[in-house]
Image (tube, rainbow, N blue to C red):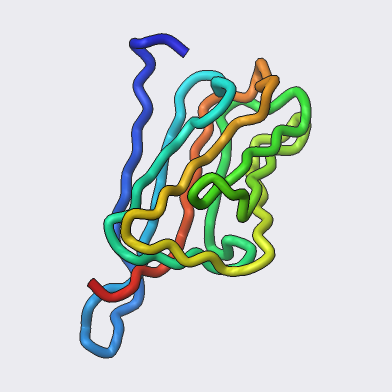
Length: 136
């Protein structure tokens, strides 16, 4: 990774209206151009309460260039793994695994960590994590 590498992160609210006619959906989307560096590839500090569902249901991921070998990314809350995002060998789709829903409070940190060593061919990773936001 060089100093000129640019990573893009989008966060938006979308979803079904709650009883008070406010939207409670919360999408966290990112695109990482080029091959993955080793270590933290995304860090997000939450400004409000957000819950991601078990299995990361409704979340999506893909890459532009297939991985040579299976690549498993670690999704962590405050440094502790709660889920994985896996790209199969010769694949471009991402599958998610999370045993339970995970709740983030304002100030909690989400990180996505690439394996060491990184796959030399996997490139153009896009992830969208779909959750719901709490009050406030």
